[in-house]
Image 1 (spheres, rainbow, N blue to C red):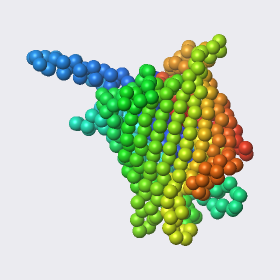
Image 2 (image 1 turned 60 degrees about the vertical axis):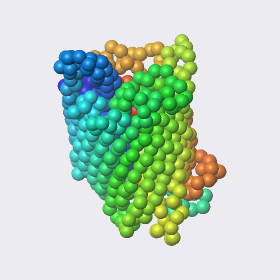
Image 3 (image 1 turned 45 degrees about the horizontal axis):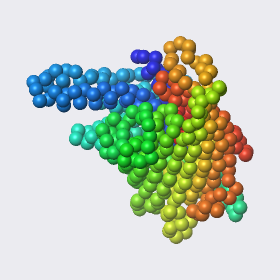
Length: 449
């Protein structure tokens, strides 16, 4: 078991160690992202490049009697396994013991399996497992993943919808209650055969992408994600709240960043539609989200070897919000599945999911720098290629109608400072954010955008 694998598993475990962990923080995609964008892709680049090279050599020699030789040269990627126990203490869980583990090259060079489980002294427990980036024979442009999460919290922190009085911007109440929640997602990712996807979906996972152009036919990775999902959340004493969401998510993604883990220039565009078709016991609903990021580099100076201005725009709506008759028969998603702001990626000065309504808008700007001074190079055991400082500001609002004037009325804001560390290819983020009424400290993996 290498130190790199130990560090990777520890950092995946650290996702749970936020200063104010709520149940929604854990069920969101933070665990999944840590695996797919950090631990997995750090191993993918060398694997898929070597595999492609051997495949090219094999096809080039296929006309002679060298089939056996070319097959023998094909690289063999043995599975790499790491498992690490951990102990954490949070407001929701109390003191908890757990174990996390990851298997890289799990049957295929680009595939991985990640699992996590914990049990706390207040009888709360969490389980999570994901199978990531599997290819099927004859489907060069497809990758398949699945994940399952289940959590029981004896003292969960939740934000639930409340009646909104005229002029009142508070649309949720914070409660502490017993809760049981689960989530199942099956993802089929189709990488369009142009740009960096021309050589197949596995090859598109490499971190470093080089020069960029603003043309999806020649630059970046364009993909379509098809994801059936099922979410459940039952809160003791709040049986009137919707407890199920089940449907289909479609996402268009043009990732035109020059690098996944260390972005200096480029952009990323994502458009997501989620549809719950409903049944006899729950109403149907639809949401959509548009997210646009852009990155502008600046020349180095006497203090910093790299400077980047990063921008993000987020707009979301629930077009079915006012459909139906009566307040209890509206086509609105549950709070845990709908449009919301607050948390480790948007309006970081507020708790996760603190603002929930029909629509939302958010703006973020970050100034990210890498200083020439790097005191972490000589630390034993672990490789710290770089660290990064950041300063950020954010603003946003939710509204019960899709009206740009209302969305920009009384905008909430946060401002903060952050540190980001590249540790053995995994990006660890520490953010401190101050809002009008509160402050939050977030320990997370990956950039907010």
